[in-house]
Length: 354
Image (tube, rainbow, N blue to C red; front, top):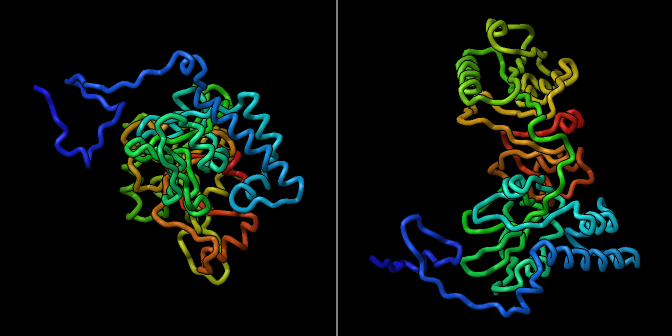
């Protein structure tokens, strides 16, 4: 049988789509020999464009012309000459993900680590269009999300993140209809097989948490999770589970004018554990007791680049609600806040600094 697409308006045919039990009929456009011989890779094209952009911005900064927006904020902490050197020396590689793939997975497959610092530089039409010189018809700034910037093959459009300070791009984000553009760097740490892991979670000595704790350790063993797991118990002393479950006990935090606000327990318990237990593992996985492991979670992160689950809320930097008042007080130089939830995967040194 031959198969006709009954809903082409909903399921637009794509050149890279394939079926396990069929052959496709393809319209092909020939390249000229001269074009094939000089065709640059996506990495080479992007490198040239970004170096050119950075040099222009460097000149503007040196001449006193202030660059508005996210790039000006970016260059407040990144020297242009260092950025150019990273690109020219090959310490960063730019690549395109598969459809629906995250930058974390794409970089990892290439034996490298996703570096979030490059998303700001890639987030403009000129850079994205240079990555796709053939076939791209549009560049739009109408969308925002943690999976942008990206390329949408269904309508040959590159997507710029409209709100990079509210919905900051993350290495782990992905969308089934887009291919992301990623900056991948050489891993700074030891070989992947040499990493060590430690999972922690915080509870109180109640029956409500007891069944969650027992199942947590059952799932940890069944999933063959790497490394150790420790229960961080907020209490005035050990309980009956301490002899069965690896446990670190810390006193409830003393907060003036606040009687037992339980969200204080987790940061206080983690801080006490880091200072008193002095763990030596490279990577710390912070979870909640009601999480469930179904397969090994051996995610490797670099120092300075932790990852976490995206949360359902977001922050507006210009708002005056309580959370933003707190953020502006304790993070005076922050240009955006990243709403996160468990699991949090972070290098031990980063967690100690926090």
